[in-house]
Length: 195
Image 1 (tube, rainbow, N blue to C red):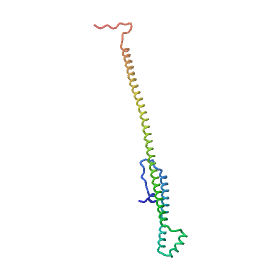
Image 2 (image 1 turned 180 degrees about the vertical axis):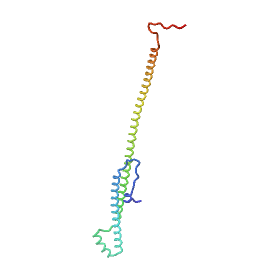
Image 3 (image 1 turned 120 degrees about the vertical axis):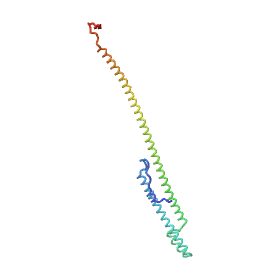
Image 4 (image 1 turned 45 degrees about the vertical axis):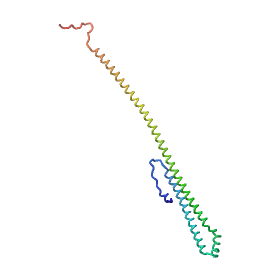
């Protein structure tokens, strides 16, 4: 299938999975340049085809005229426009077609290079994002371990403090119980047991 300028103008690309991709304006500008060049080449090609058709018609006309009369008719044409050479015209047409195909191939190659560059850039951005994510997760894991260690230290401190406080309170209660029990008043005798 031959590629036409309208095919390029009407071509729509699917959006990428990521936000990153080609600069749409840059791609559109490039495609506009390709369209202009293709239209110029198509016009040039059409012009050459018309010239070849006119030359072929003139050759047929001269061949139909025949004899000396055709020779007389050829002389002014040859001097005004140069000798009519269908082989040369065909060669020019083939050259124009080759140039056109070469331009199209170059456009396709450039397009493929741009697409490959875009894929490489997208892969690089994804890799950088993943590396940044891993570094961030590792940092958070380190912070979490430090916090868990602080919590464990606080729990140990709480246990030790409770044990110390419990011991202190027990000592105070024991001290209070020993001082609050009635003892003999100094200078008096303890009551004797009843008989």
